[in-house]
Image 1 (cartoon, one colour):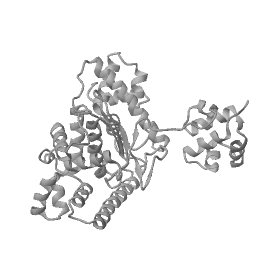
Image 2 (cartoon, helix red, strand yellow; image 1 turned 60 degrees about the vertical axis):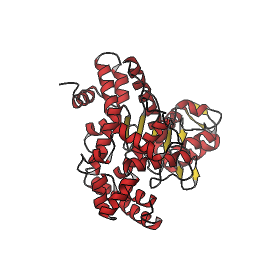
Image 3 (cartoon, one colour; image 1 turned 30 degrees about the horizontal axis):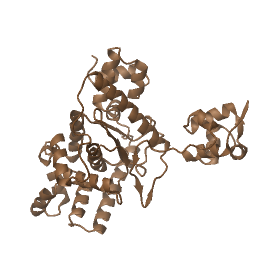
Image 4 (cartoon, one colour; image 1 turned 90 degrees about the vertical axis):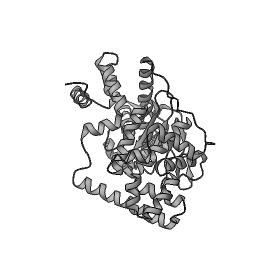
Length: 386
């Protein structure tokens, strides 16, 4: 059985996932000439159309639209790549964003059923606030002070501590480097580093874990400022900067002040000079965050900042390549699953399923789990089952 669709829809479906005619033909078990013909006359078999929709990750019904849909982000788009804005979101970004919104909606309903109170800080701030005052407020609520970070022996441990503090404060933090748990669908750092979904009951931050842990620290606090402003949106900071956007500049200023307070860094410079190792141990932050702060206060010029920042990024890239070559990049499945879902959400979903309030099929979907045995082991890891 053959069907006829708008040819431009077929070309759009292929283009949205970045496939050439040759690659799409290979995935469909066809010849490149057939793909070219389909995109010329729009005529193909029903079975082939179903497979094409699956390969290009679009709803099958999209193929019967009169023209390609204008896929937009359902939240504000604060991304900037060079001087270009408003780039079309990839299927991977759209998928993780809609998945996060679904998780947030479920968790919000759960909290309302549990008669939890809304969080006072969401939407409590404006960009007219003093960045220093705003940073002090956030640092106190989350206990992100330099003194509290000294409980950790390294800045990496300090980052983990910060994620834990978010859990305790009622903020869901999801971290993943792939869409749908599929390692063949990586999230590109060049497209986005994180996003925030503001909600008085279930505020949520998503961190692209394909980014270096050093950059994730800044992104986390940047997105938390979004929650304080009550503004949902997707961000893609370049070297922790976002030129041309007032709201993003404010979030950056506050994040920098939270992690490396200006007055404190001036005192530390008198004691340690520009010894990055000593400053990193003092503030328990990454070198990337320190470099940004030193540039902000005029201690290093743009060229030095760029050179040192690129060196740190390259060091991370080489380290990740080595881990991949050594077979160490996958890590423990359950530990990875824990950060992908967020412990408070995972515990709520598992508990609700065990109590019979949430169908297991829905629980599996929310947790990104396919098998009952995996669910059981994950529940054990979270101390729900013996």
